[in-house]
Length: 384
Image 1 (cartoon, rainbow, N blue to C red):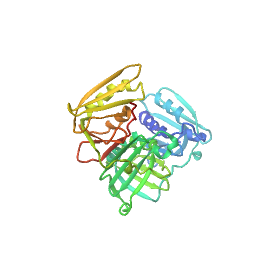
Image 2: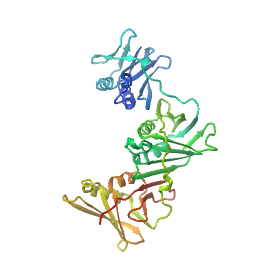
Image 3: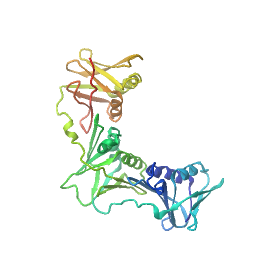
Image 4: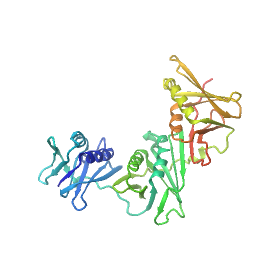
């Protein structure tokens, strides 16, 4: 195998696929990246795969001899990143030795390699569900929900985002048990090739780690605003013009989150989103010193929302912002980080806060007619 390529393009590709390399590999080859040079297409393909998440990308190269080899992801990536970007890199390997040779403007390097035959094949879906998805809408649905998923591996099903396909619509939802984010978007499905969504809904839960890579790869898509999505037998595959992301599907039933959302509310506040975020940002300096708890209390007469935090022996603070509210004055407490995470997703100038009591779920929604995003947060129980 022998090829010449751009240092800049190779470095970018290595950074991308390295995110799918196992940090604690169960086999030495899983710490490597697969390099595949194809003289017929003039492409160099790079693959990282930890048996759960796989990322593959390609770049143009001048290929003298086709071939495939694996190289240590960390070492190889660090060497390439430090080479000069104002001249191409020549990379070659010989079947008679387990070394990859690099020649650049400033020097030469040799890196120990392993056979490509030892590298596991990326799982590809040949049958099952096949859809073309609007990449911008799909990325928005991930961005609006990923943050609310759990990081607790003991609750594995909650470490993913639940995707529900229905006709041309997509509903995504994520929860960690303390908060819940739901977004429903129409016209996400561009092409249902075999009309598989005509008579049934498809619901799957994909690990958040994998979907973060899907979101990154969508943001770099060079195709015309669509990606191809395949799903079958516990595996999902996302494909654009020159990138592939594969991921396993989480097993088990996702909680029936629709039951958690109250249908009616006794209290509804309208407030300026930016004012609320700014006030929370400032008060969080104190809240972070004591469990991130902030208290908000309404004053119906003055139409003011008071936001306070008490860091016990360290200090306390308060902020006030105008609101529109008709109801009884009351006080409710939240985790400030949870509030800020959700509020930064909402894009409208004003938001609605709906709740029934200081101990029941509160809902934040955009103040518009779409009503397609719901952010539920459980209040923090306050001591008298």
